[in-house]
Image: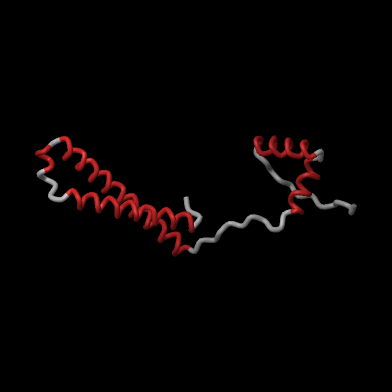
Length: 123
């Protein structure tokens, strides 16, 4: 075993330290030995995906559009529910099929935005 003459200070939250302590104890190792073995056994560190700024801005704009679509769909649903309960309101809606079509389109767009969010490592 080589001499260990380098020290790397590391900070942990109390809950993380307690978990680390538990795992080291379960492994039958001192905390420093456990950390060294886990770190040195790792193939490579977890890396964060770097998202280009233009992509991040696009995502933010798509998110805003998605929020607006949600609001529009909620409003249409409110109108549609009111029209089912009140026949006079129904006269104000010329084509419920169009409302339902818009709702389906909005849901599809929301799914696409969710997929984009996942691809960008989004929120």
